[in-house]
Length: 175
Image 1 (cartoon, rainbow, N blue to C red):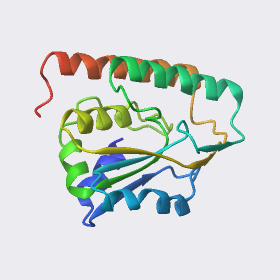
Image 2: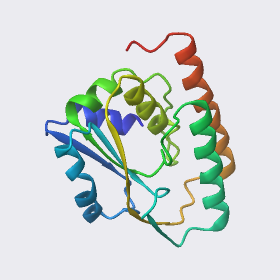
Image 3: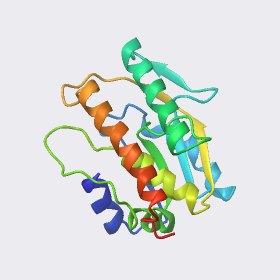
């Protein structure tokens, strides 16, 4: 998350695309997201969960864990968004700079891939601020990595989602 935040600060373009390094969602999928900019959307997220999305090579246990996490996120923080964790998101630069200046839940980067639930917090703030969000079906392929510990990282992300809700209830987000 720290690396992404640094990139956001330095970005100068009109829009910013976040994508996972492994290209689980190929860059060509951006063509599905860009039309929503013309329709007035501020945040367009690639989704593996909405109708029309395609997944490849995902182990059942990872799919199940993702479903459970998305349900928790939906109940606690983000009703109406089906997939917060797909690493393919397009933002208007002005929007993402505003959102990232308000993030509270952060982790120190390590050699591991864990980045916390910064996607959830960013989307939570976007929704809370009234930014227009579209969720678009994309193609996604699972790539195995030893840098993720599914159990440990899922628990940390669950607690991050609770922190997001708590921060909101305590009025810690300046909207």
